[in-house]
Length: 219
Image (cartoon, rainbow, N blue to C red; front, side, top):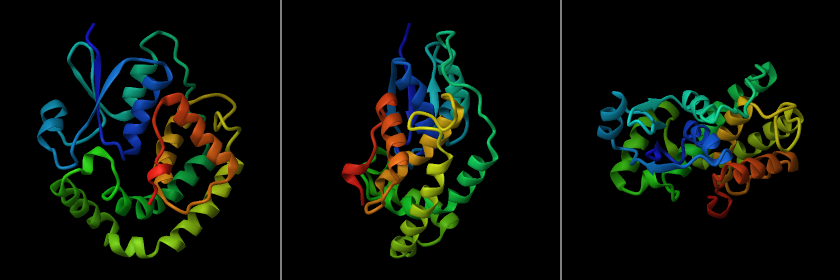
């Protein structure tokens, strides 16, 4: 049987989510990081420019992160992720942090080492697109201290929502996929202090999924 392939952007939280079950269940998959400005490849696969995309062993393509998670988790007939607990407190926390994550991370991704931003054209493509959503990247960077202080306060709140360092609920669930997928990116922010419980949570899922953090290249 042919090895499956997963097409991703390394910075993308939804791509992190799609990667997690493969790492946690030791399912062979070939990772390909697409340049940010490569429109032709994903359009040829799924008709739109989007990642992640799973190339299944039969050669067909599957988009959408949570569909990929569900597919990978059930390949062996022994799924490990319980359904989402539909926690309103966790959903509200993630919603409140959406803009803050973007303000801190968008300007940093384009000067990081992730594979999708290795050419100036890829950087320009992303910057032009996301500036329409966020505003000028330089303004967000100039406001880093205030944004980091706000995130640290919010992470203290998150620590109270975590059941333990290995699951946000009483058992491993889809909520962990969605939470780690978003938290992994903040390890790129230099000078950010994480609560011990949140740091342990990130470290745990990085280890069991095989998806590295960015502490060593934080900026």
